Length: 387
Image 1: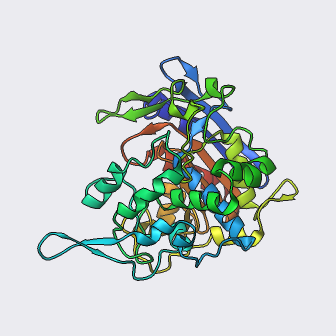
Image 2: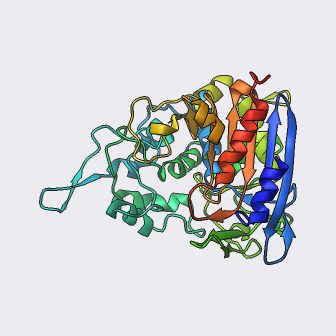
């Protein structure tokens, strides 16, 4: 494992990396290599703070499911019950004359549709078509604008398909974050603290990096076509470290450390229990980590098809695998997890009683090979049927 990770740094594949493996109740591997801040020559250390971006989604989904377990939300509820503007969203298509045609939602978008990225929403981060471009222009991630203040924009944004009909990675779980706020009367950060972070002892996970943690906050980099990296966002001047920010993105706003993320991961692995405390109900975790897409088609190559992956509430669920997939990318049936835009990744492996976490901080290119290599080596070393 050391050789795998240190070699990636030495070759310049990555600037810095931290990884951890938890197996059979113990942390069996953790190490750090390279730099968290190249400009200041700051090394990656065990307590480096990262932007985990979309790894926030399983946390927000866990909150929603906790509220479901308490009877405060039903998965079948129309999303407009909590955010009326969502009921006004129209499905757009191109008519024979090339002009856009708008249709009402045939069935109201539900809470479950949002959890499963089945809502018909787009994201605005992919581009390539007018719908994505419209979402991109909506400025939905302004750090000085609270998520509640984005909801009026929803009425003008197009849906790319009818709710329930297809999987497309989207703004859905950011919207769920605001539903948490509506139902609890708290900010999303307050709800996360009360229900998850404080019970788990996740003291270094938040939407804003505190002044105390700021010296440990990694910078992010942008991968160039020639394989080099340029600074993308300085950790010491990052919007994530500004204390006056208003945005709390349930789809991508958290910052955290590897140790903190292990606490959340162990809770998922142990069906809601962490060090003798039942944080979430076992049924809540089982529902989260079960595929609910069924035959729903996916519009992106990350889910379904050759990946063998379905989708649960907040993350992917590995449904099938092959010896080739296991050897090349460590995919094993039952694994649940998700990654972040800056190349953080984690997964829970219930069958093998293991967790893997790897933290990078860069944008651009395909998913880095170090991810699949790390997961494959982790599976090789943790699978229970090994001799």
